[in-house]
Each structure stands twice: as structure tokens, then as C-alpha cells.
Length: 216
Image (cartoon, rainbow, N blue to C red; front, side, top):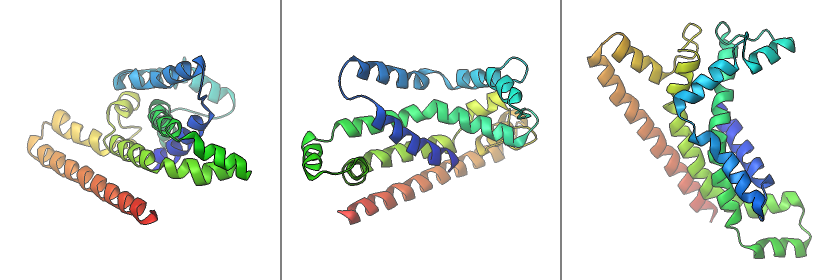
């Protein structure tokens, strides 16, 4: 819920600010794609070093600003680091999807809005946002499934700690299967975990699809 509330509006805002013509389009698309090309374990390692209070740029900067930041000791700091890391890693996906939806809108809509003297907000509210509905459904569904199954990045950064504050269900499952070698309960838990993700994704897709058809 936290990352969806951040990544979706942020992704839309960045996509709206991206150029539509010229060589800058390719430059922006390549730049936005870079975080998606980095392996998940490498992303965790980058932010593990980035957030360290002794050598990390973010850790040292936050402490210099008066924030007693330490993701290894504070549960809030650990959550803050995990959320910030996920936003940095996956907002680009939302941006690329939204940008693809924006460039597919015919120019005739904008020309009609310009003739009517529509404001920038009116263009976004009545033209761009409705045309992005399907794209946003895909973006939210993909990010929901990915975030629900998140494992590698927070495990590398915090290991589920401090304590169990960032021990997500996937991390707990791996600890049960690999750490404790309790394969029976781990197998049952993994099946239930899969069914939960499948059910929630189906419910979300059904509700959003029906809501979109009702608006039509």
C-alpha cells in the first residue's frame, strides 16, 4: 500500500514531464530503464552500502542533517530504506507504462481541448487520466504482485531486521525452508502464499475491470 501510494502518482508525474519529440525522448527512456536492468541482489547491495552510516552517502548525509539514521538498529529507518529502495527500483516501470499510454493519445483530443480553452488540469483530468486507466490497471497489478512477493532486496539490506520488523512473508518462508529445514510446513506455506497472491490479484483485476466497464 505504501509503495503503490508513492510509485503510481510519482510515475504519472514523471511521465507527464517527459518530452514527446526529439533526441531527449531516447535519453529519458534509457535513463528510466536503467534501474530495471539492475539485478535485485545488486539493488539490495547498492542500498545496503548507500545507507551505511560510516561510508554510505545517504546514511552520512541524513546523520549530518540531524537525523539519527541507522537502518540496522531502528525499525522505522529500516522500513524507510526498504520503501525508498523499492520506489527507486520500480517507479521506472510505472513511468514507462504511463508514457506509452500518453503517447498513444491522438493529437485531436489536445487540439479540441486547446480550442475550448481547457486548462492543464482539465486536460489531465478529462483526457489523459481516462486514457491511462487500462495502463494504470496493469501497472498497479504488476507492482502489487511484485511488492507482495518482495524478498531479495530487503533480505540483502536488512536480513529481515532489526528484530523482525522487515521480515516479510517471503523472508519468513525462506527462513523456515532453508534456515530451519522444516520442509513440510514450508511447502504448505508456499502453496497458501501462492493462492493468496493469485486470489488477491484476481479480485483486484475483476474489480478494476468491472469499474472501468461501468464508467463506459
